[in-house]
Image 1 (cartoon, rainbow, N blue to C red):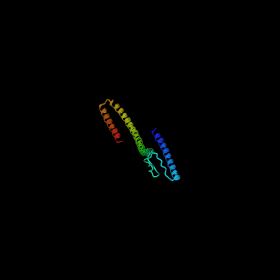
Image 2 (image 1 turned 90 degrees about the horizontal axis):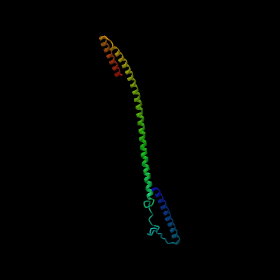
Image 3 (image 1 turned 60 degrees about the horizontal axis):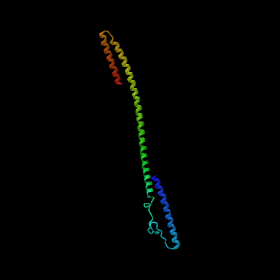
Image 4 (image 1 turned 90 degrees about the vertical axis):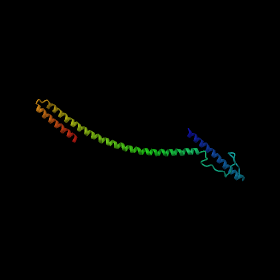
Length: 164
């Protein structure tokens, strides 16, 4: 909406400037033909061929040019931001790859640990069954020997479990 209005204003002011230039050229031709300068006044004040030319700052295109410069500055800033975001994304990608690799290594370690625990659990179950069988012995002396043997076996299993 506003950009369209600015562009229309630019086109209209350009047409006006072209008309003014045509008028100046025509007045110069009139001066050359008659020998005396013909004065054209568009603003009420007298102008001659030595009048001050309008600068870009006084031009009606100033707003349009300023908005273009602002847009270019914004585009440059956005490009810089996009470049920084691209670098950040590269860093994040490499970090995520490192994390994935570490997780894979830890998963293997956990699988091995789980297998060791299952093996120790099965050995402990077998020992407990043997201990239950020994507890059913009727002789008191045999029971104490069985308890001592099973206790020492449990200690050996626990030592092996913690040493491994």
